[in-house]
Amino acid sequence: MALKPYLPRTRPSIRPRLSTDLNCARWKPRWRLPESQRAPLVLVTVAGLSQAEAAEALGLNIKSLEMRIARAREKLRSKLRV
Image 1 (cartoon, helix red, strand yellow):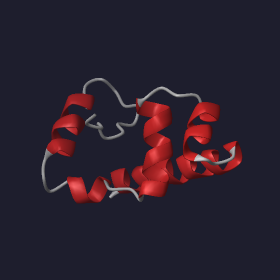
Image 2: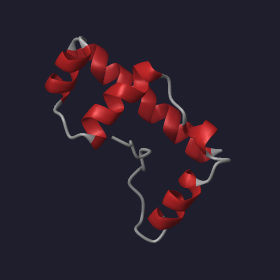
Image 3: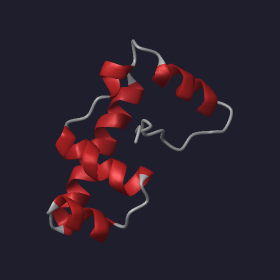
């Protein structure tokens, strides 16, 4: 299963541009997250699992999963500001 990069909620007018930019090879290294952050984020936001289901699948407690998702989102937000 190919994973799509996380796209923050934006105005519809800039969403296609972000999608195109993220597919560009020069952007890909900037959007990489450590596996410990990427897996929880993908399971919850892309795969649609609940936090409880994702935590169980990864062998984490819910609080740990929440922290990893928060760190991943913050890292992506900071990269958007650059």
